[in-house]
Amino acid sequence: MDTPPPPSAKPVPSARPGSPPPARENLWANLGFNIAVPALLMTKGQTWLGLGPIPALLIALAFPLAYGIYDLWKRRVWNIFSIIGLFGLLATGGIGLLKLPPQWVAVKDAAIPFILGLAVVASLAAKRPLAQTLLLNPSVIDVARLEDALDARQSRPAFRLLLRRVTLLVAASFLFHAVLNYILVRHIVKHPAGTPEFTAEIGRMTLLSWPIIVLPSGLILIAALWLLLHGLKQLTGLELEEMFHPDVIEDKNPKKSAAP
Image 1 (cartoon, rainbow, N blue to C red):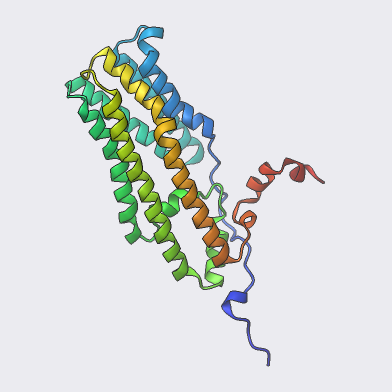
Image 2 (cartoon, one colour):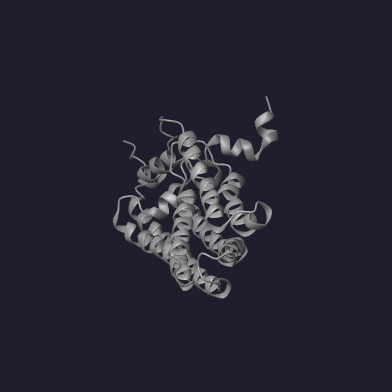
């Protein structure tokens, strides 16, 4: 009688049937509505449009709010960047209205990524850690197929260990973000809250945060994603191309998708 193959030799199943993945987001629209346009309004709104500090803030708030609502309606998912942008602008506006010392802006800008980093670490106790939610985007990654492959090869325990390492790396990126945020704000924001100079400094800080903070933090997240996908390749037996939804691969290879 033939003996059954070991678990590692089981064929990797195809993706489970289910609801289609959510539509992919436009990265440039995300950056524009949540970062670039609000920053320009805070920096140049008074010069270009003759806006006061409070009207500039309110109009700047409208862009991430409108984009977040639109994205929720279109993709049926909450846009984390819009939420963070709204919270940050509201906190900055509150500091301006209360005329608090400018160092409170540094505390606020450092507190948001610091709290997110703690939340990522705390989520290790949950069934689905935040790092898994952030990196394994179901609109791009075929999560159902990955889960089937992990079950087929009995690799769930090893996957949890991999996810723990990746989660700590993601948390480190947020803590790194918090430290750089604090240093940048203390270096740029000098004028009292509620003044036109304060509003312009906030806009300049937002623009500079992209090359100084967001890009280095993004590189850490890319390293975490590479570590996760490379580990999944070993644990599931899938090639990287097999982890993505077919339409993602077709978009990256238009000649292949156009072939008869």
